[in-house]
Image 1: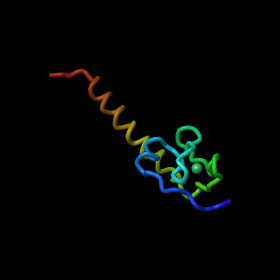
Image 2: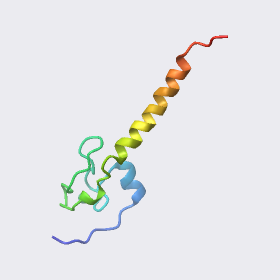
Image 3: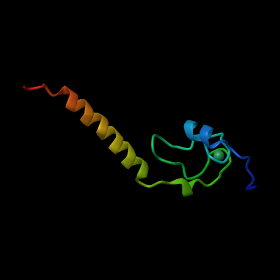
Image 4: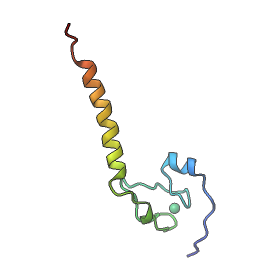
Length: 78
Ligand SMILES: [Zn+2]
């Protein structure tokens, strides 16, 4: 197996969640789980694992939206 791979656009692969090396397969298995190996060219993607970082960001972002929605549902009292 060769380690050569063509340079991919970071914006394109990031927005499409494609493999950052070959750009031909989906990087994630599910919503947040990063595949350990590329299923097309067998590149190793284990170095991309962000642990709980993405989970934390999504939880904080969704919590802010939910709290804002709850604040707007409260009746105003004079
Ligand atoms: Zn790949």
